[in-house]
Image (tube, rainbow, N blue to C red; front, side, top):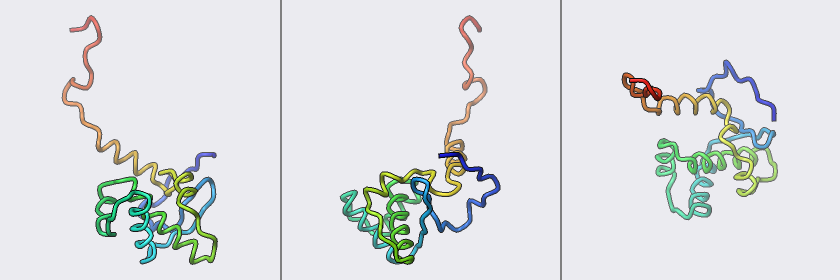
Length: 131
C-alpha cells in the first residue's frame, strides 16, 4: 500500500473513519460501542472490565483498549449504514495502529517524548582510543 501524505491533518479532529486493509469504514461512538468494547474484553481477553476501566486502560495507552473501543465503534458505524458486521478475527487481522488517521505522527511524537534524554556526554561515549 502506498504511503499517504497526511501533513497538515488535524490530529485533534473527531475520529469518524478507520482504514482496514485499504478500505475505509465508518466509526460511531455510542452506547452500543461501549457495550461491544466490554464484550470484547470478556470474550477475547477473558477479563470482565466495565467501560470505565477500559477507558482507564485507554488512557494508559493499552493496545487492547484501543482495539476494543475502535471495534465497538466500527460495529456501530457499520450497523448505522445497514451493512454486514465484521467478525473480530477479521478486524484483528486487518487492524494496524496506522489504521487510525494521523496516528503515525502522534505515536512518533509520544515515543520521542518517552525516550530518555542524554545528560552531558553520557549519550555519546568516547570512541575506542579516545580519552
